[in-house]
Image (cartoon, rainbow, N blue to C red):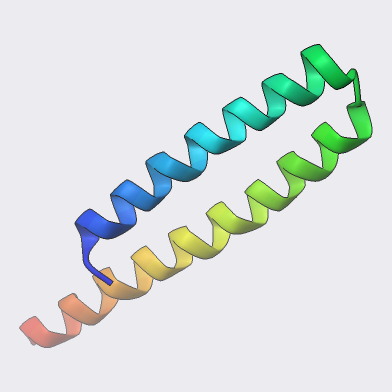
Length: 64
């Protein structure tokens, strides 16, 4: 994946998380849904960061 695509994907994920968490907290008053949502987002961000670090590592090996 291209770095620009990953950056746009990350910004999109953050925006969706903010909207869904705002809806769940202020309208639904569901703390459990918010906890699950933040947990899922945390796992997703961890996977995305691992992908970005893998890409950076591959580029470093190509320079050798």
